[in-house]
Structure formats: structure tokens, C-alpha cells
Length: 229
Ligand code: IPE
Ligand code: IPE
Ligand code: MG
Image (cartoon, rainbow, N blue to C red):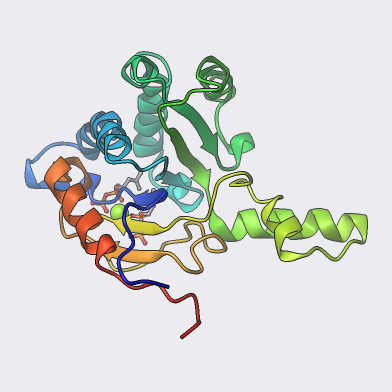
């Protein structure tokens, strides 16, 4: 494989650091989550303008649901806003929006909002934005595994991938985590087997278009071998 990767087809981002962003400003954590949400459309537009076709964002993990009720409720309110007013900017750009995760863990009205957002943006050609909400990589793998056990079927790798919630998406080429931590925190465990990893110290609300370009440049200079020589 020649050195130099060009533009990644699929970028996944762990959007971390919202709480610390707020703390530094002596604001409640929810203010950091709002600032983070407000950054999503800009990041998506910038990546799609660079030729990236798929963006998958880790917005809420299954484990995050165990945070204090006040914070979880604030996050739910922000999702409500996001899937109503917040969506218009992405719709203007013809972005296809979908969500992955354990929907049964979300309030009924948010599930309905997600469903209608998916329907309204269906067939969008301006890039695919997948929001991972109440998502856990282990949980997703287990759910797929259990469904094969129920059927008494031994899946191939392709059949298994097709039952993950990311079915239909290519595997991420580049996984970015903002907010300084150097870990995966239960995101896309199966799918990121050969993703290039990029960690930024920037807190998510501060992650700028220039920061994105730096990550893309870094990726472009890498040599992917997929275990081969
Ligand atoms: C990431 O920001 C967004 C969610 C997990 C919902 P955090 O809330 O984890 O922010 P920090 O890591 O505490 O700064
Ligand atoms: C990962 O961030 C989950 C999301 C960004 C949605 P966390 O803040 O929950 O991860 P840990 O707890 O630092 O590993
Ligand atoms: Mg965090």
C-alpha cells in the first residue's frame, strides 16, 4: 500500500471535555454540554467540505446515563433541542442524520424526535452524521452476539458486522478524541480495529476547524498496513 492516505472516508469523534470547559469558566456542566452541542454542526460541515463522507460522534455513552440526574436531564433537554431547532443547519446542507445506541434507555419523546429527524433527512447526500447516544461498544457487540445465539447461527465477520448498530457504515478510518484523555471509553470497539487514532488536548467546545485540519493532515501522513508488510 502506498504511503499517504488522502482524506479519511469515515471519521469518528469522541466528543470529550465539555464538563471541564464549563468548569474553567465557573459555569455549570450543562453549559459545557450546550457549547459542545453547538459545535457539532460546524465540525460536521467542515469535515464534509474536506471530502469526509461519514462522521460518527460519541455524544452520550451508556455509562454516562449513571451521572447525576441533573446532568442527565440537562443532556436530554439538549438532545430535544438538537433534534428540533439544531437540525435545520444540517438539513440545509443535505446531511443525513441518524442515531445509534440503546434507544430503549432514552425518554419516549426523544426516541420519537430521533425517528422523525432520521426520516426527514433520509437520502441526504451532503454526508452522513451518526450520533451515538446511550451507546456502548460492548453492549452493541453483546446484542449482536445474543441474536446469533438465539438463532443457533455462527456468523461470519461480515454477518456479525451487519448486526452491529453501525451496519451499513464503513469502518472508521480515523478516530479522534478531544479533551486530553487517551482512551476509547467503550466506543466502536469492533469497528475501530484498524482505525488510526488521534488524540487532541483541546476540549470539545474549543475543537476548531484548524484543529480538524491538523488531524486530517496527521492522518494523511500515516501509513496503514492492516497487518501486512
Ligand atoms: C463529554 O464531556 C460529553 C459527555 C460525556 C456527555 P464530559 O461531560 O465527559 O466532559 P469532561 O470529561 O467531564 O470534561
Ligand atoms: C466518553 O467520555 C463518552 C463520550 C464522550 C460521550 P467520558 O467522559 O464518559 O469517558 P471517561 O469516563 O473519561 O472514560
Ligand atoms: Mg469526559
